Image (cartoon, rainbow, N blue to C red; front, side, top):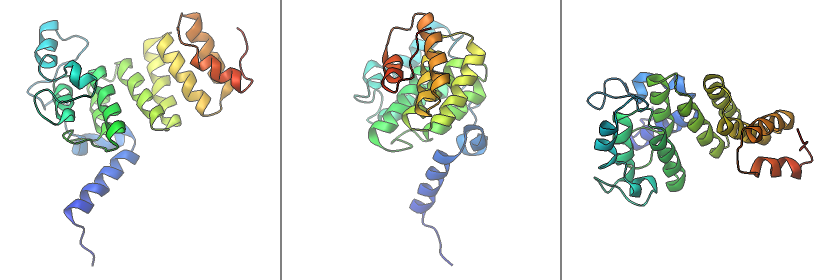
Length: 213
């Protein structure tokens, strides 16, 4: 009988989390966002004072720019602290995802949970927050998980209504899936609402799929 070492078990769990869908992870693996952190708060409705107390010491500009930690030498630990206090802090979620990709580790040192877990916690804590789904969709695009990205961005669009940013990023995900008709429709919607960047249009033009509205 082969006994798994502690290191092997940790690697196996980490790989399982990366492959799993967000809600399949659940509270048993990703923790309870409602009870951890000494009282979590919805970032959308938290007071400016409550936000500043956390951000001034843990989600500083150095942390946002992924230069160095604020209260510790482990940058991800400061992001994790921020997310325990505000599970749906979308900038912290985005930074956690980007930092994981930068250091090529999931979870990054000091994070405790995988990136997928932090999004799972945010989705459970604030299921009505379209920004969480939007940021998760962007992270999934960067991970080349385009089908999963489409699911998150379509859900975000359903909650947020017409939103140029969501339409644009949904179009990028459709494009990567070679669903050019849907990408074109999303592009038209985004540009109609004033989205400023031509990247999606340029992509569609390169494959001969762009049509003027």
